[in-house]
Structures are given as C-alpha cells and as structure tokens.
Length: 348
Image (cartoon, rainbow, N blue to C red; front, side, top):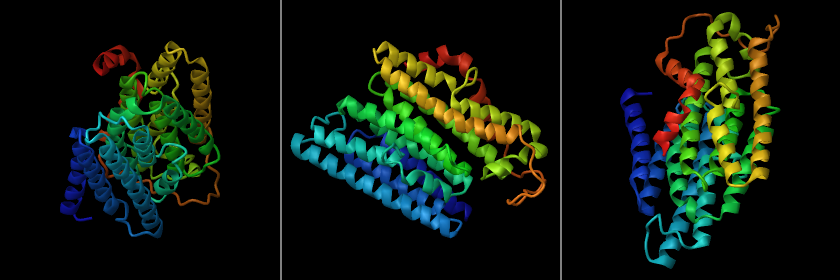
C-alpha cells in the first residue's frame, strides 16, 4: 500500500477513536465510530484475496448494522428526553438498544458470530488492529452508558461471552480464530465488572491489549497461522518460543504473569459485591480458555514436528520487521503483576 494512503488511513483511525473519546453528544460519538470503521476497511481489503474481501464485507455489514442501531437508539432517546447528551439515557429501551449495538461492535456473545470469521480472513497486523484499537471507541461509550443499563443484561452478556469464548476456541486449529475466541472471553470479563468497578474494566482492557499485541506480533514474527506450524517454531527461534508460551499462559490468567492480575481483581470485587455464584462461573469459564492456551503451549514446546507436514515450512531467514514493539508488549504481558498496587492507584 502507498505510504501516504497508509498514513491517512492510520491517522483517520486515530481521529475516529479520539473523536468518540472526546464526545458527550451522541451524534459526534456516532461520527467517530463511522470514521473508525471506514478507515480500517481499506486496510482489511488491501491484499485483494477472496478471504480478505469476504472478511471486509462481513465486517462492514455488522458495523453498519451496529451504527444504525446506535443512531436509532440515540434519536429515540433524544425524542423522548429532548437532549442528545450521553449521560442522560433515561429511557430503558434506548439504553438497551445502545448496549446491544455496542456489544455487536466489539463482538460480545451472543453477537459474536462475525468476529472469528472476520479475523480468520485478515493478515496478522490488521487482525491486531481489529482486536485492540477497534475495541477502544465502543468501550468508551459502553463505560459512559453502563450505569443506565439493566445490571442483569450486563451480567448475562459477560457470562455468555466468557463461556462462548472458552467453548468456541476448544476445537479450533487456526490461530487467528483461537485469538478471536480469546478476545470474546476477555471482553466478557470486562463487561461483568463494569457496573461495580469501572476502573477494573480499564485495567483489564489495558492488560488485554498488551497481551494480545504480544501474541499477534509473535505469530507475525514466526509466520504462524496454524497450530501445526507452531510445532516447527522452536527449532528456528527457541527464545521466542519460550516467551510465546509464557504470553499464552498470561492470556490464560496464570500467576505470576500479568494476565492473572485483572482476573484476580475482578473475582475479588465480585466476591465483595456478594456475588459468589457469578464469581464461580467466571472462574470455571476461565479454565475453558486456559485449556486451549495450554494446547498451544503443548504444541509449541513439547512436540517435535513430524517429517511429513502438510503446511509450508517458513524460511529460516532473519525477519525484517521491528522487534521493539514485540519486546515491549511481551515484557509488559509477562512482568506487570508486582506493579498491581501502583496500577490500581493510577486507575482509581
């Protein structure tokens, strides 16, 4: 892609998200989301591959549906209350429609069906943008409108997402689909705690972004898109294999890695709110996700690739991409747990 065009598209992505962050008016927020969607579509379709075009079309249709629902809900709210302010979502129908549309935008279950299919059709860097940056603007709106939404609906969305994210990833062999289900499960953890401690949602979102970035950048470095390709990585770059296994365990939420921190704090807060049943379901759902992360770790570190393989062996040449983003995100994804008190102070 032309570097000037790429610069315009990436700055439009930034502009759309910033516009949504800064707005308290529904029309401005909607405009930010639309700029965001329109900026990523050329990035998704840049390879002109049938799978990429199909993924782009699916993404465009779901995002357009969600945007139309947001516009309809905000217009309904403005018609009833007489103002466009986000903090005044007094009409229950409008607030439920908005949270449903935003759930469709970020891929929360049961509005998640587009997410694995779209991610599977993209290259790893565009998939990284879709899994991290594209979640920020809708999450800003969800956090602002969550207090007006029925708590039962938020809890149902959260539990369903963690369960679907865990179950869905169990029988996958494609790494991008596994990361899509991982994303759905993490979104569930963020939504479940939103009504009780919004600062923990932000902590969970931040750690999720760094862990997912580390996972995507590692797969990009080793040119791996399927599980059986992973079993060949250790002979090429053993140190990268070690850090990748740790990043996957961090995504699963094992101590003493960064991924344990948000899960631990969220379960603690749910227990404080006198919701032991919800906390138990969430902890058990985390085990489902942990299983498929362990499966990936097993394939990478404990199996030797057979001599006859179906996939193309990646070339053993040195990679030409920058290693600094990978190093930075991996370090944060592995070693942030001791900083928990400082992070909590910053978040509150």
